[in-house]
Length: 241
Image (tube, rainbow, N blue to C red; front, side):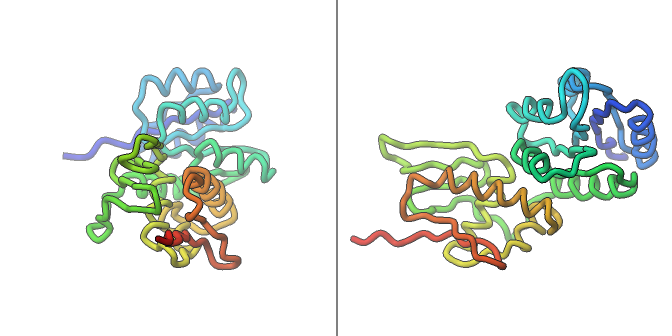
């Protein structure tokens, strides 16, 4: 029995461009729902589920950033790709801070978009590797439960504090924990979590490292150090008796 096609929500205010992308992706057996403004995009999203979302940034009624932010408040799993005519670094960083998985600057070829979709879906649907089965880590005063993505400070104490990590935050923290007190090469993290090592994914990783530093800040003996030209190091200093 053939598997159901992947469902994609495409929100693009240029009707002609949107029709071209939809027709192209449908040639490769994707099921594409096209919306032409942000509000229509949200209405269609609620009728989901979708396997992947593609949002133009500049749209009427609700821009792509706002649409993605509203979705991320309830859904941290569904991959999101932004399409934009802008090349400003600030916009790229804003997109990744919201939770984008990729960012494409117009003009681009339909083939390039197809390859990026395939790579993102492959990562998001991949099954865990059998050798990558560690389910819990102790990081200083923190306890990290990998399957549920829960990071707990001072587990078991009256001041216990928990935070639910996003999938990428959890993936990155797990890699740091596996390399604890050793250098985690930037290229290794980018390749395994983001699927490629380039300027945009590197900036996205920087955003996620900043988030992890914030989550771990209650323990003064923990530090994520930037190793210039190489990567990062999760330092967990031993507490003297």
